[in-house]
Image 1: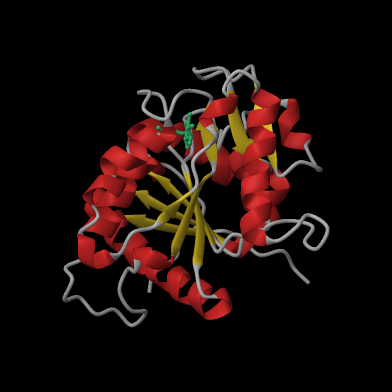
Image 2 (image 1 turned 90 degrees about the vertical axis):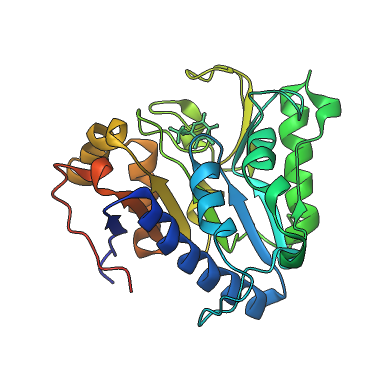
Length: 264
Ligand SMILES: O=C1O[C@H](COP(=O)(O)O)[C@@H](O)[C@H](O)[C@H]1O
């Protein structure tokens, strides 16, 4: 079977990116709830939570989409990566998501279940990763019965160096094949101590949505799409093919030759 290509959806402005992302999330939510009664999603930190909040909080409660409305009561939110810091630290991806989105969810949209890291293990990064892996095991079934957890949707960012989650270019963690969640103690981007979903978990998700906006991303986008050379985001594209969709603004893909798809 020929390999499929990722979907590159480009929009004039960030507001348009958010509107399309909302529609894509609604489709993914409906598919997850049909499959197993809940919506299991993992989210990144960085610039993503802001765009995600614009996508999800803009929904008027009266809106009806072909795929229903956002129902956070069915959501299980995990972190695609997290920094080994207290949950109220300025560097915490959870703290960021809480400030941008979780604290602003209107009561009539339901309350998500949010799986944070276990802050009791901040001193032991391996234990922190193992505990988070146990959290996945409890939600997705035991490691004996499933080889890998299958997220309904991953909402990922792309760093200007092509990293995603806390998987950095050229880092040995890119070759991890056994753990679901791995520790990293030498992240090139501070803070150095983090935990991250591993590549096999990422590439087994039902759907993967990258969100990249702004001109600061255009050089790396050219590399990822036009001259793929092993950057972490390009590896996800290669392994996931058309299960992988990119929601970007025009500024982020200026000069990129890879063909855009129309978002329907
Ligand atoms: O350190 C991180 O960076 C990436 C990319 O962030 P962005 O601000 O360039 O969008 C993010 O996806 C990841 O979750 C975070 O820990």
